Length: 417
Ligand code: UD1
Image (cartoon, helix red, strand yellow):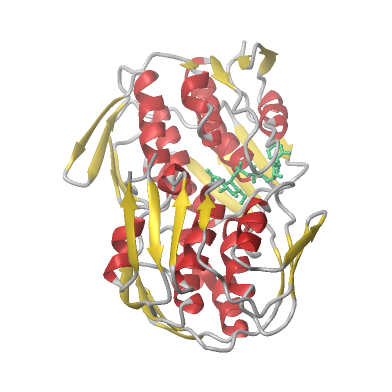
């Protein structure tokens, strides 16, 4: 099993190009199932989750090839409606093929994603909302068996809770439904807006009617498209924190700074010096890190996907900070590993109390999920000595060329088998 060795305490200096967004690419790939015309996608990140989604689409009959860095998807002969456990179990986003398969064929059998390290992660909101479009479903032996006897029919849906995945599934499904669908209380993550823009580019009729409401008029004509996926805002946030935690000086390129305003404001409050240009952010870490209280929230709040990384940084603050995790029930697995490096973090329910003033000590560590793993890399980068991070397949799910990007800005990091 591969590990990362990090020899820490180098101030990171230079520039990092941010890759395309994993979380925007996944629903866009699923949405290509709606099209019988060719789709050309640019800027997909080269990470394991994207490979898994491509395998899932191929198992459904999609013809996919790479031409230089462009992915060409031909779903004109795509005809299978069964998404197997083997492919969905490693990546919860697999459930997003349910909406497009139902829209296209009126029936589908898709594995439930099952539990995962950061909580039980049910799909009840997806299923209840789909039933409002005329879908009947049963859950048998770990699979959702769904049919829409009369096809999907537009409806008015109010999501009981903000869910990124459920919003995506419903937007895609409603795009080919008969009539008009109104979706209220939608997630408005930038990745959702990217999905909507992609769907509009293939001919779907979708408009924002208020901040969290969408109007979708089902269409019958789909067009060929070439689309470029947005930047990965979580990757960008991670490297901004890498600069702050190593007192480095980094230029983060290929981003839209306005999209990550919340994160930039928080890093400024903590003491980082940040300047912004059109598509890049310059950040200079400060020796003194100020404490702050943060709670995770749906966009435009602070993202749960950066909670572990900011916690590593707050361990070095001069006073106590509190982080409240309001999205997932069990997203503190990194706490035990950060404490093994010398942090003093205690958790009560969904709150983590971070004592601050930590001088991390290098250690042998275990990655537990995607974002928890990268928080260990950040802590290791900030401290003298050699840390070893095991089970880095979690990191490879979502960070493109992480050690190459870090090496280019002066980190001593290598992958060993
Ligand atoms: C997506 C992101 C993930 C991010 C999360 C929150 C992708 C591929 N993944 O995950 O990186 O951390 O948004 O920003 O884009 N819930 C239910 N029932 C449901 C669906 C969700 O109870 O049917 C709950 C979840 O357990 C969680 C909360 O709602 O507590 C938010 O989950 P959701 O927004 O759906 O996250 P994902 O789409 O899975």
